[in-house]
Image (tube, rainbow, N blue to C red; front, side):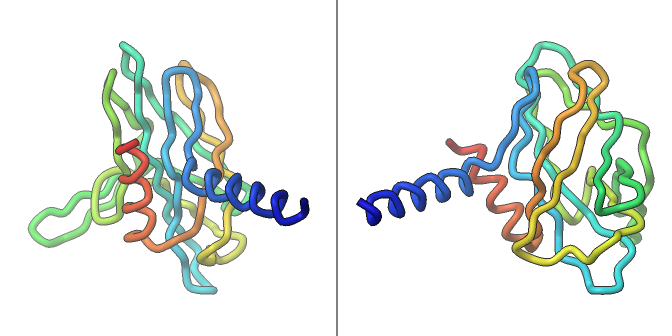
Length: 158
């Protein structure tokens, strides 16, 4: 009996690990992750893929978390080998489209004034606010950019 219960719990937890996405109205937020930071880092970066399954554009307008003083919406571009990062007031997700956040370019969430280092294997809550859909709490996993990106990609294939 106990063996069956343990097995059932393991199956449930494995399913939970794979099904790391959240829903808010027509939005699906897939595999939020942040990359580990050195112990003294003041800034971290989080990523989340946002699928808009609605017929109108959605706008992410803010984010917050207790692990950082401020969470800003950012974009990063490369211009002649120079990385430029800048804050944006909103991130638009077109109707029936998916915005993929990945390291190396594009949109991301800057965690500024970290109150603790981001350690691989840990999780933390993050609240995202959308202009029309409202606010949602998501759980962000701390893992390498390569692992996080691959896991997020896997979510889009099932």
